[in-house]
Amino acid sequence: MNLKKQTRRRFLTGGAAATVGAAAVGTAAGIHLSHNGTAGAEPSSRPHAPATIPFFGAHQPGIADPTPSNAVFLAFDLKTSATKSDLADVMRAWTDLSAALMRGDTSVDTSLVSTGSAPGKFTMTVGLGGTSLDQLGIPRPPALVDLPLFPGDELEAAASHGGVFVQLCSDDAVYLGGAVRAVRAAAKRVLRPRWQFNGFRGAAASTSSSNGRNLMGQIDGTNNAAVSRASTGGPVWVDAASPEWMTGGSYVAVRRFRMLLSAWESAGSNTRDRAVGRHISSGAPLGADKESDPVDLSATDSSGAPVIPHDAHIRLAAPRRGAGEEMLRRSYSYSMGQASGSAGDEEAGLIFVSYQADPTTSFIPVQQRLAKADALAHFTLATSSALFAILPGVVGKHDWYGRSLLS
Ligand code: HEM
Image 1: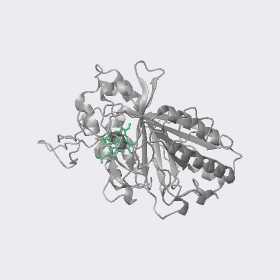
Image 2: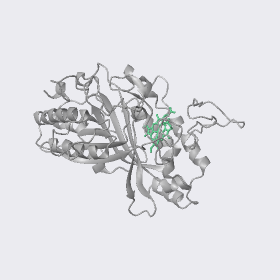
Image 3: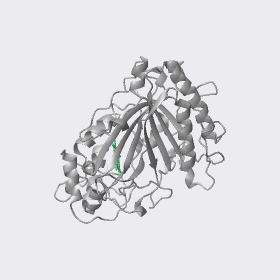
Image 4: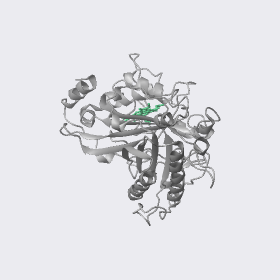
């Protein structure tokens, strides 16, 4: 039995479950950047929020945009016989489909049973995995590495990696369901479905925070520093660099973490707070009062011990100054009901999603640090892992996803 399983068993047998109930599960992030990078308040919090997001632009939508309450993440493999021109056909078809769905036009595909419903801030975001480029003999961008196996990972092979990626988001789960079918139908000659993750965020804030809570009851998204800087390019967008077809694109890391919820609920509140480095109830950093208070990693208590422990999640995750470690997190919760073979525990957790300009300086070193020493990792298990290159945005009517790579 591996260490994670031993740890988990130890936690599962200890103490009565505390209540981290449905009331603690919150809503989507408050501050966002629109598709063209303008900062503003979360549209759903405004009385007459627009239900559509613009499609055309230098960057794809669904990254520096608001996080609607539902998301579906899809990965595909390229069929063995597929050529570059076959993949180009899929990308052209998906461009038309995405443009139509984002403006609320469901007449484009017979799979769209949800005709007549509103898009609910629908976005579609498309990327390529290293395996499809390898298969087509296209050199990979240097940042599109194979993700290493991180310490403690127990990955399901069929739910990891992949050659092509699509992220679909909407406030309307039915609209999203139709979109998933249409995306698959347009690709079925060329792509084989590999995995699908369905995610959700709460519809209304459960606290005074503008950030929602995850299934562990934690306010998640407070120090999502990259949001305020996404428009300037640095942390999220690939600038005119290598290769040219990635200019304006990004890289997405997708990691599914099962939460060991019985263990988390059985742990005392002090243990839970120290694992994160914040008070779970308020979201305030340890040693502070409010969620918005700055994190002081140098603070010590009267005995000289750090107020935010050495192994606290926020200490280890905090980007090292000047190291290019920043990322834009855009995670969703998931639940698949009771886990088989573990009475009382759920197959539920977090679909961790982060966008960054270079995962080799940001996501990968941060994840290495967390996997080695993060106290929160005693309560989670990574079961899926993937990295994709997100193509630049579609800039006009004659453009399509990946045109400069595939035409
Ligand atoms: C189940 C897995 C995870 C959970 C439940 C989780 C939860 C949290 C929570 C509650 C916070 C504090 C509030 C905030 O600033 O958003 C936080 C912060 C953060 N997390 Fe995670 N997280 C998870 C995995 C990850 C992973 C895999 C990474 C990156 C590899 C990561 C990167 C970060 C960063 C960069 C921060 C902000 C740190 C700071 O500068 O204060 N998290 N996370």
